[in-house]
Image: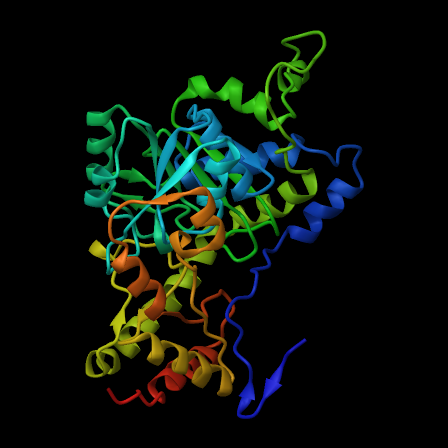
Length: 386
């Protein structure tokens, strides 16, 4: 249903993309005898994802959160181990560590990209540190050369949370495939989605068997289905991380449209950047500016001069029929973060970034008129005098 407000149609912040063959694929699953996971659409979507992501070894999961839970355990995190994470990330980045009995250690970010600061990572390492978890915010690459060097010198593993950066190629390699384990999210807010879904990308093929057991409730059912054992049984820790064929059918269609999705998103992103650059410069607003212009067009953000301006601009845009939003509450200041984790060093940049961040609507299918309305609305904001 289209919501109409004074001044015309409301521009939503996000709307899930609908790919051409979703209904056809879903009908095929419903008419088949295989609705549970690891059927033909799981296999097809996995092949497509391998092509898009560059990952040779991967497993679809029920969510990005579940992929993170698997990744943390695959890296051998035990009770009491510490995992360094950016404070500015989704809660799952830390909750997955806590689920394995580990302690998330929150560090600061870079003030322009929102990505973890490698210098703060090194300062946070203790004898209990097991791994470094990075998140490519907005699909903008973390400095993986610096992170890899730190990990190698200290004997640590690297987990890549690539929920925002599917298909992004960088000088370091394809995002999600550079660390020891990577993950993807296919929540319906992501560029490619299946409502709820994810994937774990295995940099080390030796992790495959353990990942299969973990995903299949702790059993060796995957081996049984391939005829490698004559029966399957409970062999290790696991949970129900295998998505159904219904989810895989939607994901398969979405991945088939990946290039079209990205083309549309980048066109809107580029229009925002070009149209708002002069306004932003005059108003002391910092527009998203990825190094080397490498990003996934997952989000378009701006940093307002102050938190008061950010809050007022949010209200202004919504009053004018444009749904803008902020993003994460920093984990170090959250109730669970204070309970389960600890903070290393100052997180001044995290607090400033989170307090001034404003994201614009960005989704395939936005009309030229909707994009123009977003731009005109932002240009119409009157800044608070300081």
